[in-house]
Image (cartoon, helix red, strand yellow):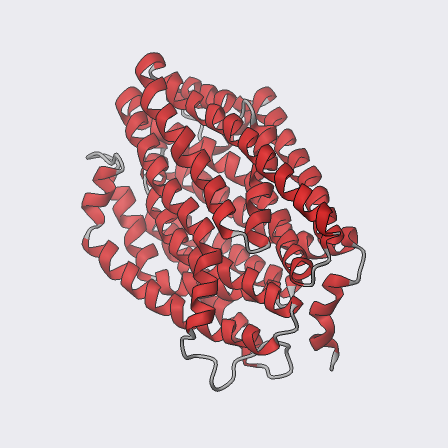
Length: 450
């Protein structure tokens, strides 16, 4: 074996703390860069076009979550399945995963684009768009949907790239997309004056460039996993395995689509377009910290998946503990920043004083129990990483459907706009309690098998 082929084997031998840092750091850098782009994108739009444009962009969040749901159904499932197959020394199946990722993302991406373009206006109106915000939301999503296939393939290949032992290359692909995205967005919005369409064009053009770079890697036969004849036909066992594991993030994103739509509609009713714009800022700030947690989760996944496949349970438990500590630390920092410096954050996006109070209240309320969110996210990702899809799905659904939806239906009727903000921390707290119980039960099972 050459050096590249030996790369996945270290997941079962090197110290877990070193591995988590090795695999998580590139993902954290990439995720942080991606979240910074989303913030910069909103800052550009807010300062150039105003709060209503931010509201229009916010109204695309549910649809973006829906697109991400189908992307994660394939990509995240492929990442976990690749790590597990490599842990079982089943290299041939890992190669089949690579081919199936490309084919499935192409088919699903095309179908999603066609259907959503035909239904775009009704969908955006359902999400809470009005006469002033619909043009912004439509202009942005038309271009994003046109490039949806590129987005899906790019994200799917990045998952396989990281899981097959190339976390740095995965990071470089993301950094390339993010860096070009920021450059193109500034050029298209401020120089060419393309408005919100410029932000969408920048996203697709940057992802296209990063995808070409990824394809160069996978066409190189010297790499551990690469394109070859016979891997592009759909294999029932591979597809079933990817979809089973990917079902958790898929359902989570589907629920997120429904829940965000419920949030924006409730904000529209109780606070108007400015409340939706304020939620856009709150969401971007939360996204920044949660993406760092997701970076740790992505670093954990191949380590936990490989060692679970190899039945090295003490190493599985060890990487889980390290990841929880790191995630809770990050979300605690987010809590402190938003509680003590809310106005500073808001002025980053816009200097419009008309909705300062609304956004400030939103930051205070949404981040109220933010430290526990890190634990809940790691627990859900952990079950997904070791192939226990049903438990990951359950955790995803409890937070979104069983707790958040009822809170969104009840609390705003009592507390109006404040009730919308209160719904989020209430759901987070209850979901974390459920996660604690489920994780404790799983850890007891591991200890019996040691």
